[in-house]
Length: 98
Image 1 (cartoon, rainbow, N blue to C red):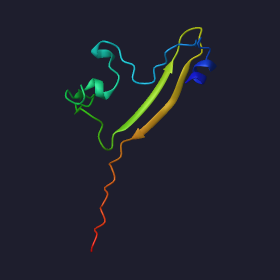
Image 2 (spheres, rainbow, N blue to C red; image 1 turned 60 degrees about the vertical axis):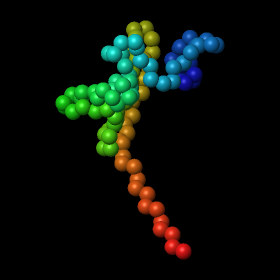
Image 3 (cartoon, rainbow, N blue to C red; image 1 turned 120 degrees about the horizontal axis):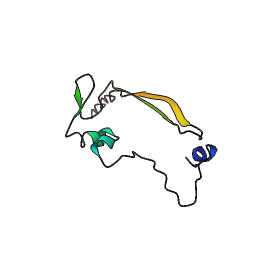
Image 4 (tube, one colour; image 1 turned 90 degrees about the vertical axis):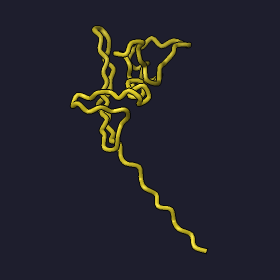
């Protein structure tokens, strides 16, 4: 993270705080994770297709894209990062015979 900041001209100083988790604001419109948006799954979020969800489900695909821009500064970002939630593997316990 320090290298990423330094290559873009960030004036990083000793003692600066770097956020490495979900950074949310104080209002409900500024919540950033499914855990926050759904109050730990107790208040499902409404999706654009009319479906409501409390947590991600098997088969869901998540795509993250990010870019920050400001006049007079180098843009910072990353390309698409995608992942799919796959079902947990079923483990069949081997039977033991005496």
